[in-house]
Image (cartoon, rainbow, N blue to C red):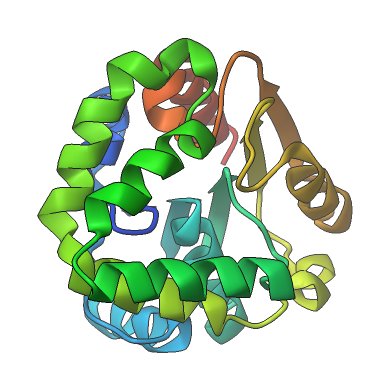
Length: 230
């Protein structure tokens, strides 16, 4: 049985998918990719995954992982048989976002990583979850380290506009977003779902950007339903 491949967000690791791996493993094999830690651009990361994993792909990506999933569709549309895009976007960075990322990179290079990340907590979570989830989030960022934060931010800054690709996606697609996501807001998910034929759009209440942690049971059920529909 073809495994489902989970693609983490920026500077995230398998811990981001802890609840989903447990829920999905009884249904089919699950693998959490780490190619986002081994390339300097999204096209490089996608090419590495395609080389390492043969056959059909069932892709579920969150945030940067969703952007990587779209790059995989661009490079190998015939191999991607199902797609789940969580808290993600097909748009390129705006000039404002590019400036913000560039400023953050400068601070990372100065050794001020924790300062930047603590400020980012307010953007990563719905207020209802921030206090409880900030410590494991910061610990995950510490595991990645400043070098990965810099490299992955640069990869995102350089990404192409994938919106022209969306009408050509023909596989079953699930799009999920948190209602209070400030980093990839609901309008980005609505745009993707509108451009992908037959896509299912789900908006999660009391949920920000890290929806696999903020609403794990709801995300699990949506992914189980998505897999069941294949």
